[in-house]
Amino acid sequence: MIFQNNLYFIDSSTLEDGVWAYGIHLNPEHVIYSVHFPGEPITPGACILQMAIELLSLSSDRKLEPSIVDNVKFLSPLTPDIQGITVRIKSETMDAGAVKSGIQIDVPGKCIAKLSIICQTVLPD
Image 1 (cartoon, rainbow, N blue to C red):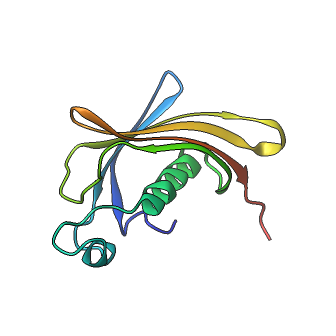
Image 2: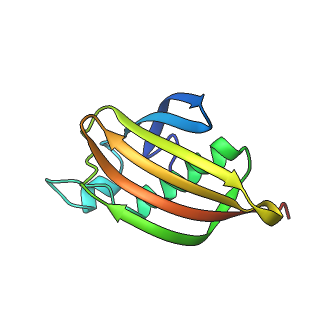
């Protein structure tokens, strides 16, 4: 995990009707916010994608790496001061251990991002 327990922290996790929901909060002191952008920090899209993949790996109980990022929509900025961030993950295992997922990142009252990703299981060396 690159960003878990560094850029973001998991506050809660639930599984209901095949959908994982992770309550997370961001670390406003993380170095990324000092450069992106000073005075008005936002979470870079690449970091949001990496967080989603990390949480998908956690929910799938296997290490995954993206093979196809099919659709990504960033609808609002994700700032480190936002409270109540929820990452919802619905996934299914495909042939050869691939995992297809739909991921939505919400904050109270609005959707921040929607992602469709296919990941492959990383095999041990």
